[in-house]
Amino acid sequence: MAMSLPHQIGAISGASLTAESGGVSGDAPSSATVSAVWRSPAATNLRVSVQKTGTEIDRVSPSPPLSPVRGGVRPDLSVAAQALMSAPVTTEDVQDREYVVGGSAQDKEGKKGVPVYVMMPLDSVTWNHTALKSAGVEGIMMDVWWGLVEGEKPGEYNWGGYSELMEMAKKHGLKVQAVMSFHQCGGNVGDSCTIPLPKWVVDEIDKDPDLAYTDQWGRRNYEYLSLGCDTLPVLKGRSPVQCYSDFMRAFRDTFEHLLGDTIVEIQVGMGPAGELRYPSYPEQNGTWRFPGIGAFQCYDKYMISSLKAAAESIGKPEWGHTGPTDAGHYNNWPEDTNFFRKEGGGWDGPYGEFFLSWYSQMLLDHGERILQSAKSVFENTGIKISVKIAGIHWHYGTRSHAPELTAGYYNTRFRDGYLPIAQMLARHGAVFNFTCIEMRDHEQPQDALCAPEKLVRQVALATQEAQVPLAGENALPRYDDYAHEQILRASALDVDGNSAEREMCAFTYLRMNPDLFQPDNWRRFIAFVKKMREGKDEQRCWEQVEREAEHFVHVTQPLVQEAAVALMH
Image (cartoon, rainbow, N blue to C red; front, side, top):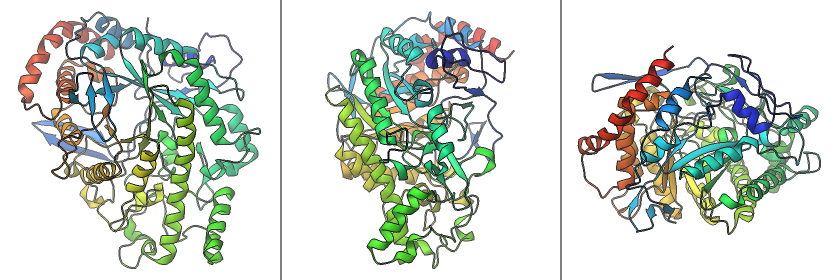
């Protein structure tokens, strides 16, 4: 039977949890007290409408990847689950594929194409696995939360419902991308569920607030531990990196029998929203709104200590007392500030070059440390390791690229900030996972000089030069052919006219929810998955592929309609 969100999280964490929408508590007996609070998605800040074939697509900008959950608790989703679990499985064209270093994926017969994964919701543990497999989906992505598994006491891991989820994926022949989520859920675009860091970690932050990222106004961010304390024994005798490593080792030992077969990828969380970046654009409490430039996060005592040492090492001790003081506020635009303005901005001077080099290198070193641990833990298991990079496309058309700089990506009109990241990942054989693949430049507000297509192209070129596989995600839910066509175009990686042998190694679709299973959306999704799996060498038109998807849609349509009616009440 389907499990509601609180019951599922209760099963995973062994905790009693509360839900604002109903106050349901999990039944699993345990002493754990971690709570996950359900809430409606926050009001949006800016809406962008795109007119396509007579249908207006109203959605939220920008592209920071969404949290693990969207929408409210929907116990009636079980109707759709029960219905679609009875759908016939079609094994045709569903073959195991392997990542290939350098770019594309291919099946065991050498056929190329891009395997599609779907991000799991937390509403139910039995959500339409059969339907996904029969649609040609390769597998699912799921968050494995540090705050739930090791929530109560250090070194005590409760994998609870995750074992059930993994076994269910194996039963239905679905691969799993497991995200090691060392961040808090809550506070980002689309976050509808709050899962804090482990209780004992929060207790340590309460004792030493400098363990949290801090901006120049003293505002603390509790989404992820400051990388300034990565190697210091600040968590009851262990460093944060040691804690991450121990968690991954416990995961490996628990699910060893599934590694390389069912569990094929470990995406290692390295910052807020699981991304390798600083929490420079936090939406929580209205701190940041799109398309603001964000703010530097280097004012905890550990980061300042590192900055001071770096400044002294080049004979400029006066540069080590603070970060830029003229970089504006979270919601400024580049030209509002002395530091980011195009003419004479501090970012382009000697101090700016020093500071931005230090700030971005600290992030790279953080990624390097965690990747070294992950590689050591999962060596010889058949697992691919991936790292997620944020698609920060607003103000991309400016000289300074301010939002990217505050997030830790030293990318400007005159400097490629993504090549060093790609090279770092290549050294460890990791996959570069990037977002905003579905977006087109003209869909975004042009007064903010948004350019997601140009950004994706730059990243594709950087990964090509570094010879690192590139995977993609859509940043916002889309069900229209227009978005699907853009994903297909981007995944082909035809960026320089010399990419005939290269495609994305995988694509993860955000997200499994009731809208996906609406008949028209479901038909388009099946056709999209089929086109992705066929690869860019296939020249068949959309209409032909959608006609082939009609039979499956016809079989499931009455059941899907029944579920849709239930969801509307």
